[in-house]
Image (cartoon, rainbow over all chains, first blue to last red; front, side, top):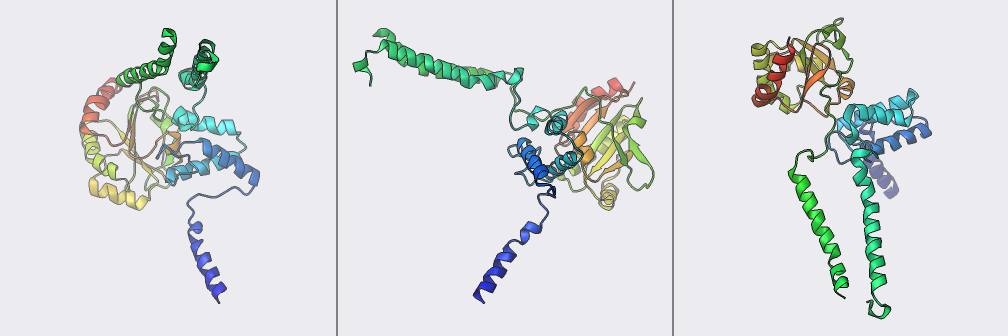
Length: 133
Length: 180
């Protein structure tokens, strides 16, 4: 009896899963995996700091469905990302593309590493061993 | 020895330089928060949609070639659309600018009663029930408004409700330029 009650309670707890909040998944697991991977790269146009996979906005849901339809139509990942980018601009991509106006963003870690390396080398060159702390 | 103590301050100096660079960048234009694309001066998407309360007639952007017009994405469930409605009514009456309303993800009955209550500023009301046309136009919500010129090019795009200020200072000058 105890087990039965527990099972029933647990089953009832899964009811919200029936709410079609995420939208339909594709039947083919490989295609669905592609859809999820693409969704992770697209910014939700409503909430802006979430991917469309993480967002509950209805527009994010529409975009998830759109990605799946395009996959079923035989579009490549790049074609789908380009489709979104043509409509919403670079900002729809959660990972900024490497291009002229983002070069400082992408190159700055390297610049800082070189600068830090330079400081380090200068320090070790100029400081006698016993004075290093 | 003197050289080494100077080196100790190097990180602080670099930090100060970065602070100054960021401060300068923040104070100058072109450094506002990133935004989704605005499609001004790009061709309007090719769109064809059913018209509200009509089984046959369709709204098609290609039929509007040669005319300048306004496209307004709205919904009866959208609160800012309600606040915008009076401004749209006035615009429709005073400017002569044809306004196409695209009811975004809405039911025909609720759209009809919304327009019955607040008045209908639209020349044509098209229905984008699935919201796909909205995505084609790159909208991030409702309301959003586009002014399209006779060549089918978007000349003005407003995200969010139109206000009298936006209409008078931005929209109407472009309209008088494109109405031909």
